[in-house]
Structures are given as C-alpha cells and as structure tokens.
Image 1 (cartoon, rainbow, N blue to C red):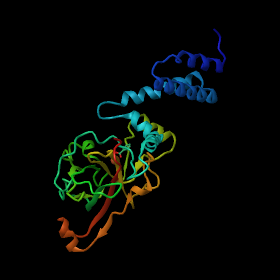
Image 2 (image 1 turned 45 degrees about the vertical axis):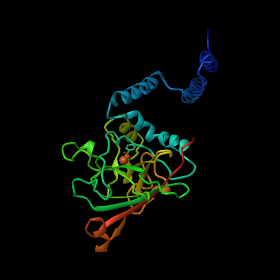
Image 3 (image 1 turned 120 degrees about the vertical axis):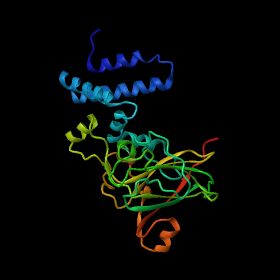
Image 4 (image 1 turned 60 degrees about the horizontal axis):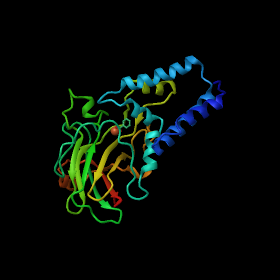
Length: 286
Ligand code: BEZ
Ligand code: FE
C-alpha cells in the first residue's frame, strides 16, 4: 500500500496497537510519534539519516563494561537530569546524576578517616548529618562518597598513579546521624571526550567541564536512597555544568579555616577547607 507521510505514521501506530503490555505500548506510541514528527520537520537526506545511524552505532561501539557512552549522551542532552527531576522527591535533599565513575565499591572507612590516599591536594574536612525530613537523626545511615583528585581524575582513570579506592569511602553515621571525613578539595574536570559524545560537544562548540563536586549516595533503612553531589561553591563552571546537574541547594561552601585548634580536632593542619552537608532523606513508601 502507498503511504503519505502521515498515513505512514498511522500504519506504524496501528502495528503496535495490540502490544499487550500497556506501558510498552504507550512508550512505543509516544516515541514513534515524536520521532516521525522530528523527521518530517527536519526532512533529512538519505546521507544525513545514514550519518545519524553511524553516530548512534559509534555511541554503542564506544560503550563497554566501564564506559557508558549512551549515558554520557543522555547526560549532555540534559535527559539524565530531566529523569532525575521527574523522579526526585518533593521533600528532602535534592538528587542529581550518578555519573559513570561509581563503578567500584567504596572501601568501608571509619568516621574521621581520609579518603585521600595521596596527600598532594588542598586538605579538606567534610562534616554533615543524615536525618529524616522531620529532623530525626538517622543513626548508622551509610554515606558512600567518591570524588576526583585535585587534578580532576578519578582513581579508575589513573590506575598507574592513583591507588585503588583513592577518593572513595563508605562511612556509617554515628548515633546522632553525623558523619565526618578528611579528603582534598576536588577539581573541576572534563567528562570523557574521546568518543562520539566528545565529537558532538566539539561540533556544537560546547565545553566538556563539570564543576568540582563530591558524589554522595546516602541510605538508611525505611528511607529512599539518595544519589546526589556536594558542589564546591567557588568552582569554575558552577554556572555551566556540561551535564546540567547543578542544583542551587547542593552548592556548598568549602570555607578556608585557619584556626589551629579547629584543625587539630580533625587531624589536619591549618589552613584547610571545611564543607558541611546536611542530608534529609524521605521515608520510603510502605
Ligand atoms: C561525574 O560526575 O562523575 C559525571 C557525570 C556525568 C557525566 C560524566 C561524569
Ligand atoms: Fe564526578
């Protein structure tokens, strides 16, 4: 049968109309409708459509067990953050993207321990608390943190020069829901650009940088796990994150502290930087 541009869409929609799973039917219908609308609007040449397929093929070929180029594509197009926003709780600490560097388990560490195993960056103490949205301290909550070093690299990116587990730690909050640990101030850094997503950024004259941040996953029984970041307030790119993940409520002062007594309390020497991050978790649906 011959098809006009719009009857072609109708034929495809009719072909999926008997899909038994209603959610799958809805997803296929919506995606097909929007895809056809985009193609009708853009009117690609055959060569342009081939290039689109080649681009997506390259995204797939770049992905493996440790590199997820499709997630990166979703990140730079703002889709990861859109999904976070749709699914985030209305109360409690705001969430943000997981990112691709949580690929190894964080070593379990004692409160006060350093996650920095190298000692070259600017000393930093992070303190904070984990509470229910009603303010009740969540004793024993877990706080999983990971960050890049002062040069902008995660341990997994530099296995020859950084010890495994550098910049990572899994802490248990004390009986008042408090946590504290030592680290170095992380740097801003570029997302991986050696793949098709990097080519896309170049073609669109976009920079690849993320502002400095410490990743956090906080969990407590009976509560919804939270994936978020502490963003370093005075970091470059704080207003221009390549993956659109900054939320104002997560921007945290990493204040310079000069008092030696304060430094001694945390086992660092002055001057150092101190960041405080209070986390509120929402109760999981029963
Ligand atoms: C990260 O913060 O680790 C990250 C997030 C999205 C894309 C690339 C890196
Ligand atoms: Fe990161």
